[in-house]
Image (cartoon, rainbow, N blue to C red; front, side, top):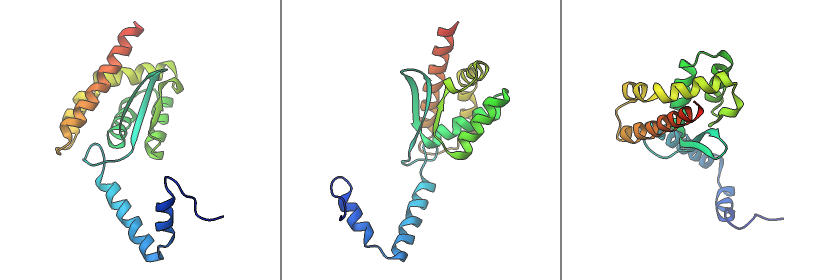
Length: 153
């Protein structure tokens, strides 16, 4: 059948000729790059998304997304919501849809995002060259949560 051509065909041709040691070195490079990269610590990495409602979502680097999910999992009182957040964090799902939570869970998550995440982030985010960008992104999330809460009243 042959090697597929197109968008990734040349990459596939190049990679299929690698020896075991070359694969191992390539994997090591990828892991090291991923370990250095995150929205909190600088560099490029995948993103995570919080869906608030149809057509309303917030997307950030996986580092910032994971930071937010960890914060929520530590601070939310509703046990089923806290457990769902822990699963997202532990399994690295990078996706939270508030519609999947109970009404109590949604309300509590929105409240924590609106009122606590910015102060927590200012106190806890490490000093890096990307810290201000991370704080701005978290600030946008807090503003979005406040806007949604004010529309619900």
